[in-house]
Image 1 (tube, helix red, strand yellow):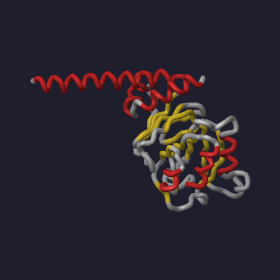
Image 2 (tube, one colour):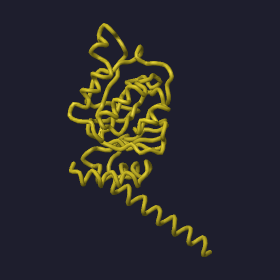
Image 3 (cartoon, helix red, strand yellow):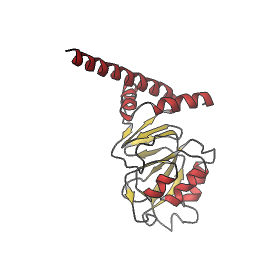
Image 4 (cartoon, helix red, strand yellow):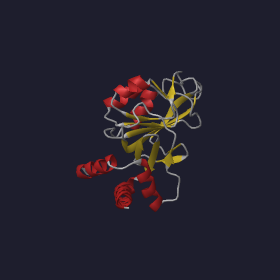
Length: 215
């Protein structure tokens, strides 16, 4: 998208909430598009941008040798076409309580200009993550290393996180404890609808308040 459109999308995203985006998605789609009960070291920090993806499989040194299948190699493949402004989406593939990374690994996102991460597993080092300036949403804080359980395997393939399909380039919108995945071809339409819905509801609430005061 052109730079002016990117600015327009970000401005819209800053002025709507997860519920507004969910309502707008509901006007267009019936498919499951949201995640709930997420954790973040900075839950007021907006996560918004197109996705690059990474999949984790159960660790097996014989089938998935660590010199090839490791975070650095797979992440570098994920951002081969550029990472600035993008969101790393990490799919645990059935391991929501295992750590998929921590502060050291996530600092690599900063160097490539990503705006944050959405993971359906846990992350370590919440204190360090908060200081990195990234928007981080996951299934909770972990304290144990997870590399003996899962390992990164694939980059920039469609993934499923929390029951939601994410294709590379789809937009991630997360704030508070929820996230919504928006098809990339409809992101402007969805955010515009979300802003209109929010404005309409605010006007209705203001009218009720005024009526109650008059009554």
